[in-house]
Amino acid sequence: MLNATLANMATPWDGDRDDTLLCRAVRQETHDVRTFVFSAPAPRLFRYAPGQFITLELDIGGQAVQRCYTLSSTPSRPDTVSITVKRVPGGQVSNWLHDNLAPGAQIRVRGPSGGFSCFLQPMPAREKYLFLSAGSGITPLMSMTRAMHDLVLDADIAFVHSARTPDDIIFARELELMAYNRDGLFRLGAVCERRGAQAAWAGFNGFLNLAVLQNVAPDFRERKVYTCGPAPYMAAVRAMLEGAGFDMAGYHEESFSFAALAQAGAEAEAPPALVAEGAGQGFKVSFSRSGDELTCAPGQTILAAARAAGVRMPISCTQGMCGTCKTRMTAGQVDMRHAGGIRQREIDQGWILPCCSKPLADVVLDR
Image 1 (cartoon, rainbow, N blue to C red):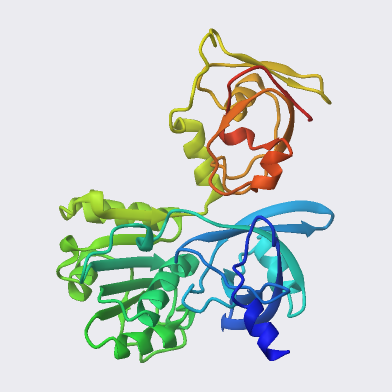
Image 2: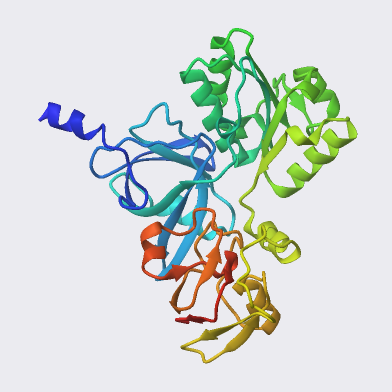
């Protein structure tokens, strides 16, 4: 029996085929942050790039909801994966997870997906990194740090995390232990807005600024920067680095603020798509249930054309990540540049994501 289990553990988990995960444990990280640990129902090995995310497909009050969460786990411990979720006041998904997800529960997921990972970039010997995070934005950077620590990679890491109080620092003890174990290759700093209950807090107070950055990583201009956190935090980090003369070609950021992504999607065009020869003024998009029709200009996504025509469609990320706008296409052809929000078997069955699909012919949607 044990030999059979060990043999099955060598089977890779396939997110397109094995789309169900079993909750194995729930860990309280801070007063409002929990880590949810998952495995496949049958033993499987998880392979992904540290920093990537999965998309949860949930039924909340009879409503289908999708939400992306970065894996805080590391593929160097391949038998389980985990997400670390902060309870957000009024947050539909975070509150549901905190209140309902317990060991033994099953959820459906897609992924892993995403390109925010230093492991997807060239990693020369003794590469120097600066990880900047705030709040639950620590998760992708923690995944990368855990992987580097487990694999004993010859990487120099400076990690600066921002939190409201010392008690709100996620993974505080583990980060301190890794800083101790890496013998000078891991410099750790924490910045807290206020001391909270820890009057003896000896770390940095206030907000991340250039003086704090120079204290923890005086050579920050020589490092590759990876940052994740709320949109205002990342905007402040970008402004600080640009003002300090940092070469922004070495800057990488990640955000799952779907409101910000949706706004960015409305203001910026997606990467160039194929345009069919003879497209002329574009292609017709028909909605078989509502009877709506619109014209999609050459190179325009179906979602953008629907917005311009006043046709309502369910949307969230607008970037092909979350799957909220998933729709069955019953006729036509599109060029779809998604970011993990749809499975290959769904594509084979005729489903598309209008937010990242540009028609190559007249299209009919089952909506």
